[in-house]
Amino acid sequence: MSLDFKGFEAGEIVFRMGDEATAAYVIERGAVEILLTKDGEFERINMLGPGELFGEIALLDGGTRTATVRTLAATRLVAIQRSQLESLLAKAEPVVQYIVRILLEHVRRAASGAPGEARTLSELLALAVKTGETPDLADKLKHEATRMLTLATNLVNAIAEGQLELHYQPIVSLKNRSLAGFEALIRWRHPTLGMVRPDEFIPLAEKTDLIHRIGEFVVQQALTDWPMLKPLCDGAVEGATPFMSINLSAPEFCKTDAFERIAQSLNAHQMAPQELRIELTETVIISNVDVVSEVIHRLRGLGVGIALDDFGKGYGGLDYLQSLPFSCLKIDKSFVDKMHQSERSKQIIQSTIELSARLGMSTVAEGIEDEQTAELLAEMGCVYAQGYYFARPMSVPGLKEWYAARQA
Image (cartoon, rainbow, N blue to C red; front, side, top):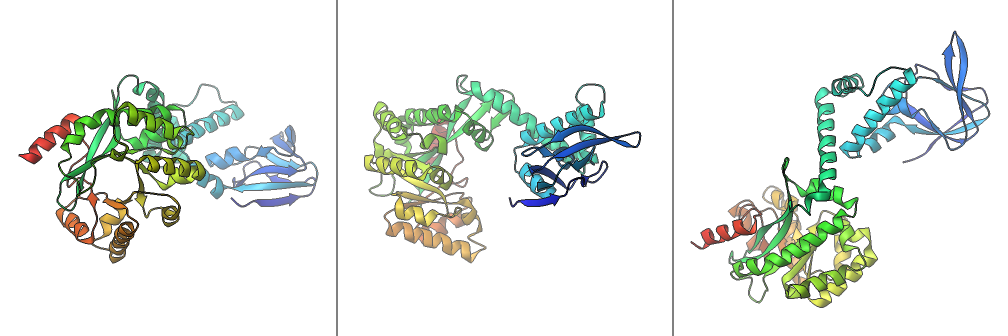
């Protein structure tokens, strides 16, 4: 965010009560006084000096200025424009946006001397309409914020109460359509909200130490279930080993003892390292390149497979292939979805498959939803695939039923 500096001589008005709010200000040097108008005369209610912020309330809630600001000496201000602040706020989580809205309204009511407690939802929605939001948008924001607060509160007990579970999506060999392995995907069966998507609760967990408990749960549960799932792998690619893929987040993988914990878990469950595959996104890698690199090299030395997930979506994929010993590339669904309509997407996939083969890596295409796509990927030389066309993620009992039906 670029800085916009503004200079004022002593006694100049920065803005007046009732003006439209276009910017908030931080005092770099100098001083200002905050003035209210009483009986046609200015009355000073506060003085501010270097490092202090003013004008932010009207800027955030879209209201007009509630006071006049005048410099007491030659003053240099840093202006924070409305567009800059709105952009930052728009990127915040719904719960943050909603809480900011409520706090702003409290400040407004306190400043005006209005009696009563916090506004009701209907009053807040009325405020949203007044400031340019539709009722639907304000209601949606409140709903999302309430849901997020509920999830954040309940996540603490989710593990202890057995609400988290793993579902497994089959990964098939495109050469002969045999079952080659599984990807473990975490799910939260909330007692009142139903099944909660991981993209809702994992970001919440990553902001606390809960992500480490969740990561440990994923590893232990996947390795516990593997002896029941391994026999279902009815023939991987010739010479390949059946495998279980798990996903680890940046905080979990970047712990200094990540290698030791994974190695100890493999030993405790008597699972061959070659049967475990860990999927990492570019976000995980760039979070701490040095630590991640060391862990990857040590795991590969042990025999654990490492897959680069969502290959092609980030910016450093090729650089990581040069410096990190991946054993597999996962072709993102966004490319697979477009390969029949976009020659560019098709060529990107073809180049990825050929590059992987030359580097001794396998490939997994994600998001396969029809036979035509599966056949084309097989012709292009892709090794593995997963997607709803083959099977959705399922619990262990569900997988056993699916496998029995598949064999019939």
